[in-house]
Length: 211
Image 1 (cartoon, rainbow, N blue to C red):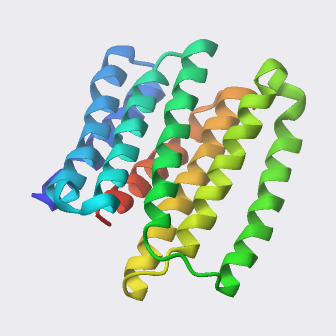
Image 2: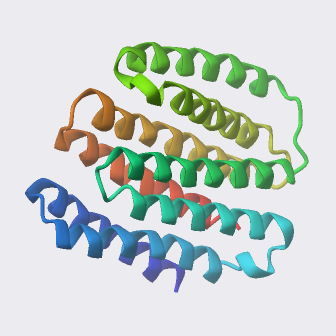
């Protein structure tokens, strides 16, 4: 079932890319919610409902992100702000989930903190002149994303492969947000969605499978 859900999700993402390229609004409203529902269903099929606090928090994060996906279908600034809020809640749920996994102050955590501060500063410097009244919300959002990545690196429970699964999902999710920011504030272009959407959904599938 999990494999079928992952394949379905990726197929829906392919349809979504066609819709974005051809600006087919009806297909966007069909494909994007379908792809997002698939990663939520994958988490449920992997045992999120029986996964204790970690599973419940991860599922809450996935649901919040799925809601954000739907909100971002509309291009208006209010819808974008609402979608960003939903994603911030999703990131927050992921942070809480990662912190249940016996976080450890290992050297890689400190390296990640430095790296995320640098990346966050670079992103804000690039965007700042184009954000206007969205400056403060975007700055808060970038901070939450950065904390999520650090929390994924700090997670200490499980074997090495499992820890890297959390890190890969969190880093991929954060990287995909760069495509969203570029498309929203710098230049609307299909290339942003061409790499950002597959990376986003692959990252959510990775996180969903971790439960």
